[in-house]
Length: 473
Image 1 (spheres, rainbow, N blue to C red):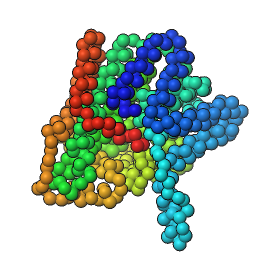
Image 2: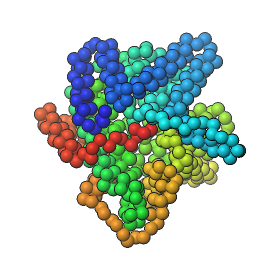
Image 3: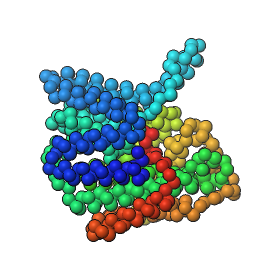
Image 4: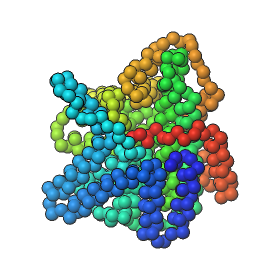
């Protein structure tokens, strides 16, 4: 089910109506949301709910074992088994062919035959998101971040909650389960209006910005980069970074809005990432829940478990981030580049601190240059992210260094989408907040008319069911 399509809105309005009818009956409300979430996932593929239920039972059972363990050693074993089982499921669907290909290549080099058969596996949508969310439960219980075990019904809803099921945000158990374990509060009209305003904003980002940029600029150039002039290829490179941002942040806005209308809060996932003044600062602003997960559940344990240099731990974490995005050497190199740059920034800042030098402060033209530089570096590395392999990335980079003259077919749609995307991202944040507050304060009849008008405009400009970029992760 495409969450930017008409079918999803019929589904969501039905769920919203049932949720309102069941107000005051918490168990029935949550049971309805769980069943609706499993139905929603089954519309993608009927087999996917089986995987979701498997991950749910493994990690809920581990949580029960942690809570009942008589000593830390037994609890630690339960957590380790759950994490290993969950990662094994993820690795089977997402990385079997990648690592199997490396093993077969090594065997062939040594004179042997293929050891791992190449298999055509259907990658479950959102498997990386749900795996990370699942393992956060026993880990949070063991670490003490979560003090109360969840009942199976609450944990099933935590895992399956449909607004964030397919592409996040990643919500650790310690952040979301407490909302399920307390008595549900009535959802106010203000919450519903604020949530609907977020859904409207997400629709605009996805359909009127990300999809238009993809269809009229990014996809044609990445498919045949040699057919276009170098300036147009550079423009498409920047266009892809904007498309990726508005695609995922659009999904996030719609997820946050739907959750808000149902009385729940999900964490924010973006903080104007292309305003970053460094690569580390970029990762503090981009896909915040993913970055936080890797920091809290991988980097921090690595830092305390062994005394490796900081840059080694950073490289491990960023290679893991790269592989999280896809099973390919281009993603490994993507992670290595970002990890190396973050490590370099860390070394420079610690060196200045050791010499009692203040950290540099960017203002005015220097600030603008620093932002432009970081945005360019991020966009350049995203070529690896967007390309299917090194050969495709090499063709794109070669076209960027090609002739300055040639085809520059910038359509009106792509030009307007680019201007709007840049304007929305780089305009003062107080303008956005004031506009969102104004929309949420409108009378119900006017708000409904605006929503209907937006749906009409979105339908008119829709490029068809394009899916979300992060569905593949």
